[in-house]
Image (tube, rainbow, N blue to C red; front, side, top):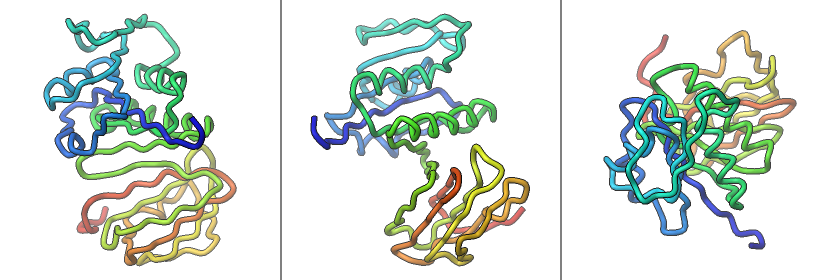
Length: 217
C-alpha cells in the first residue's frame, strides 16, 4: 500500500442532514460505511455503501444486499465509532464523517471525540456538512488555502488549554494560551488565501463555516 492514502466515508444519522453537496465528491475508491440510520440518507441521496453497521435502535434493519453487521444495543462503541473501527481494520487512514453533527448535542460531541480517536491512531478525520467543516489539530500546524472570508472558530479540546498561533486571520494570535473556560476563539475570520494555524501543548477543535461572520452572540 506504500504511502497511499485510502479514504473511508462514514454516513451517520444526525437529523435533517443534506448530503447532496458531497455526492459529486465521492470517488470509486472510497469505502462507504453507513452507521445505523445513515443508510436512509445513502438511499435518499443515491450513495451506494459497501457496509452497514448499527444496533438499529432508531431505525429498522435494512432489507438490502449490502453486507450488514447488527450490533447489540448495550455496547461501549457508538455506531459511528464501530464504523470507524471497521474502516481502520480495512486499512483506511483518511475519514470523512457525514450526517455526524446537529440534532442531539451529546451525539455531536461524541463524534467530535471520534475525530480525536482517529488522530490518536494516526488517521485524518473531518466532519462535513453542507455549510461547515470540523476537524482537530493536536501538537501540529496546518495551512488553510483558498478560504479567505470564511468564518473560523477554535477551542481547546481534551484539555484545559492549548497554545495557538493564527496567521492570516482578522484576529491573529501568537503562541497564545487559549483557555477552555473563555471562548476567545469563536467567530474569527480568515483574511488570507494562505492562513496558518498552529496548536501546541494539547488539542484544539476547529470549525470552518462556508459563510462570513454575520452575527455575534
